[in-house]
Length: 102
Image (tube, rainbow, N blue to C red):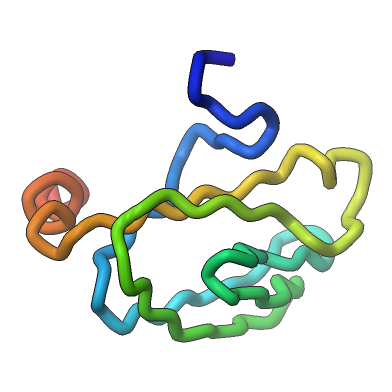
């Protein structure tokens, strides 16, 4: 754990999204029922095997938002953090979208 890092709530791969943009998230699961939740963004959606659920979100300001699986789903339930990083649309295109497209 590094200084400033939130223990057990940080993850290896953050979901990076642009601010002030309507974003559609599609959620499913390959094993058991999970629940993808980021309370500070007002988002909670179930991930169910064999089903594709969707939620639309708009993040108003840049920042880092933490969440976790909120459905008791097995032995590793406590180790399923979610981190959403909201950046400006310009930063999103310059730093993330171009790298993803390569």
